[in-house]
Length: 192
Image 1: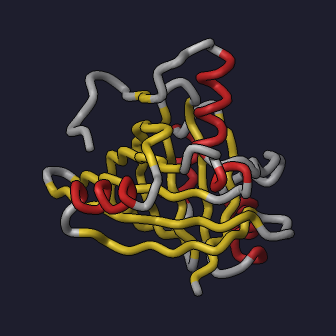
Image 2: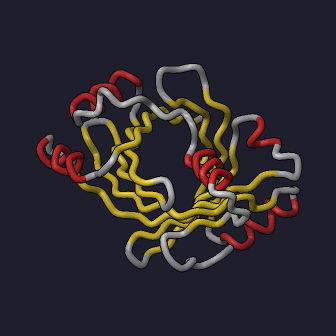
């Protein structure tokens, strides 16, 4: 069983954080464009149970990969901590058809630009989402190392955001009165 432990922080800009990452000697890993497809049943059983089922299209340059991920309910912790099971899939369309056959339908789709660094034992992701803005996610082996990275990046005063991007995006769409559950930076990429 894999457990994801992270801090998610809302920031006004990534500029100062990039400078701080360079100053701390963090290693830049890659830039990704992710398109996340969230699935649930007709009763929204997963969302009501604080769980999610996601098919992700991840682009790095011209390289395309797909990942099917299940995330369990958040555990009691000072950090966002939850069970995560992820597998890479070679045929995204077949994965989508399998989910449909099991009674799951697409309920939300959105893009995210992610720039990833390694800082010590932590992964620092600078995320940009349409409608929501800029975030920092710090994922690590335990809360102590995540807190150290957060402090070293000058972000210790920021509150942790417990909600998932899917929840935040859904709430924003509701606030805006939008029926459409697809959010892209510009024109949609390949659709599943």
